[in-house]
Image 1 (cartoon, one colour):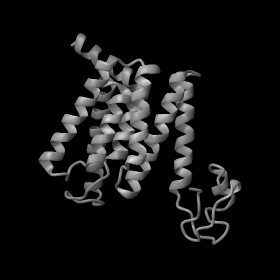
Image 2: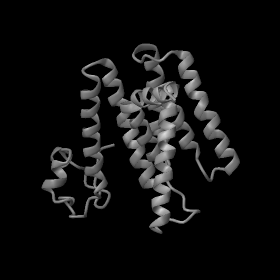
Image 3: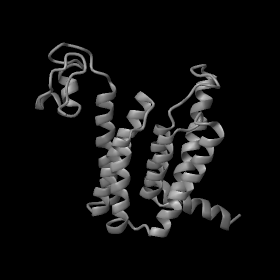
Length: 219
């Protein structure tokens, strides 16, 4: 449906929906009821624009760039949805996974065998954690996101994304515990961390792999 103010339910017009500028000109408030607009809206718009620009400059004007941009839009939406509501809905996961799967046959340089391995890794890795913890460590949404990551990246870059994600998660956990902003049993949304790991792998994954292989060869 049409975008509307969550407070007064007034439908938003064109002037209300200009990325960043509408928020600035309205001074962060609904122009109808003057309710304060959450800062996550302009942050989402800013991160989306910067991500799209970074993808274009990194990969150039190609069909693969368009694919990366579309999937990135879904990933950013998942990032904010899980961060704000602790939920990864099928409304984002299903179309993104479907589009990524179709792209394997048309756009991506990922073989079906590679994709099959990339799907198996998160299914087993996340599935075991869900079973062992009875859903306390990870949820079904995280598993579905892991599958999307695998189809999007391929199994080699998926490994980089997972390692980066768990490294970020460990650092975040240490920070929250040392600053007493969280306790040991505090649940932290893992979806945003997985999305961050995905983008690290997308932009720097090959460089990280080459660096690591260089260490092994010259060790």
